[in-house]
Length: 494
Ligand code: NAD
Ligand code: MN
Image (cartoon, rainbow, N blue to C red; front, side, top):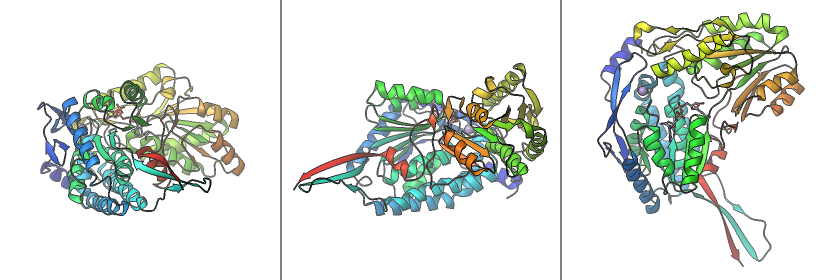
């Protein structure tokens, strides 16, 4: 489709804006709504139900009742598998509608929404579904007069609080394993991007997920999110978002029922280019995409580029050239690779970091300005700072925009030291043709994902998550099931 066709489609798009509780859409109990605007062009999109504590109460009750009823929690895994595969199929059958909602809501390029986010979301559901009737429990190696069974049970009512950068995909990374293992779920999307979450509730219901098993509560974090985090009858809280809020959630769990808290938080990931990198052009292209993809609104963005001093003069021109292919464009244009930032407030934050970089003495190599003002949207030029010291704010704080800090180093030891000198530990990459160095440095990096001679590789088969203040627990892979299940030991005397 062309930009004109997407724009036409967006004008006739029916947008559901209510919460989904116990199998039906409903307004917030208090009747309040909040305005949801589009960063693509500044247009008003929807007046979305603003859920509060009383809505959380209804949703938790519905989730608990469905869990106790057992029409999902006590199904055979193969039956849950069938329903979840039908749900994944429905996501794909509505790919264009979901992609359009996602792009309008948070500004990412329509080509990415359609080509990456929606298929990845469906795949996350499908992968968990396909796995669930292939995992076995354990028999303990006991003495002969005992039978020790080690079994997994769903944890119960799960609240999932997700961010706005990959709204649908982050939701499905949680929903897939949470639902496959038999839990009842309450999804709380970001107030900046509630639309796809609201829409898929109906699709899940159509696929056969019973009433109360999957609920969606749009609303602000400090109201409905906090109500869920403090609720005495929520058994587990899974979260993707900022480290600041992640820490709050740990406090809320401690203040309430000690619910299990699983966190995927921020990052400031190092991308290390050694002088013996196998291909400087490939490294430059990957470094550009690592900071510009999804407008840099990526938890694993390669936001600190560590370049060995001896190749810097050869590498930087390649990097600047590579980033020229990541110009901002209208988010509904299928050719666009960099869309709009999520809103004007975030645009101001990112521009503020660029100001701070200048003030602290870093050298602006390219970008640095707002873009496409004539659209009414929140666009910015991808930006590179050279001469960054790892102590500067632009090297320490998560900017969550397309702003790259280039930092020099002279030795492997120094590179590892700088790379690990951060409170975060989500991801890291290194470029070298030395096999021993690749393994040595990969081991030394304190991060949940390490990429060698690539940036951002991976699929559903490997766990994803952080060391240090990037979080705990893992999404994706069979390890994700750990968050949604309790282990039970049953001892039978023979
Ligand atoms: P955020 O922390 O502001 O919000 C995340 C979610 O928490 C939203 O749904 C929000 O409404 C809710 N929330 C806010 N305050 C709350 C409170 N007091 N109680 C309960 N819930 C509350 O993050 P964001 O701005 O939406 O997303 C960007 C952040 O997400 C970045 O830090 C990014 O690194 C992180 N992120 C991490 C991963 C990962 O997998 N590690 C992936 C994507 C994004
Ligand atoms: Mn929005």
